[in-house]
Image (cartoon, rainbow, N blue to C red):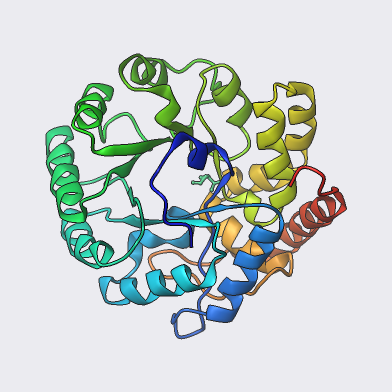
Length: 311
Ligand SMILES: N[C@@H](CC=O)C(=O)O
């Protein structure tokens, strides 16, 4: 596992994949299936794995946290960066800080607590967590109420922020007052687009964000990595073409539930059996599985057909 500190180069060298986590029927960690998924992503060029919402870290038991972290650390390649998530509640994140501090992860992402929290309370929790972890953190902005841009600026000035995952969904991502305000206050090189392939071109080209996170990259790693490269080199027509392959799966994720659909898409594509979902989530109803099988297999086949010249 790569353990170097968070730098602009680290953030921009790879799509930040946000994978699901495979489990056995008894909900224990399925090492072989997770290994297969990690190798699939790495063989497509992905070098950053962010274990967060899609892995249902919202609900991961603290008693299992060390086992999962150690498994990820020993399973990924030497040049792959793993970013675990913590929280979303304060009690969980402060217990996780003690576990993280004994390990070599250079940062962790704080999952946003939707309720009950306040802006000032979230700042307090983030400060206490970053002190306990003794590393800068990734802030996850998923709505307009968890943390205000002015509060993020204060935390950034205090040196606590390694990066910001910006994930407020807009019908038209070009119009985004919150993001515009945020970028007036913090260094834009620290801000990552956090909603997959769909808004990635607008976020990187028009707002100057540094990179993007993706769940669908777990099914189609090559195309998503090529999309990142195309945007970075200003080939936006090529970027649009590359992104098109992801839209059937992204449409299905947005229509049903992004986390649940991704979990089952990895299984349906035949990459690895993700098994059941950790409560409080559950797998998709059987009526959606046939359609998901078709679109996830099509994305995987499309991805395998891409050549590897840029990887
Ligand atoms: N939510 C996005 C990016 C990950 O956080 C996705 O799952 O594609």
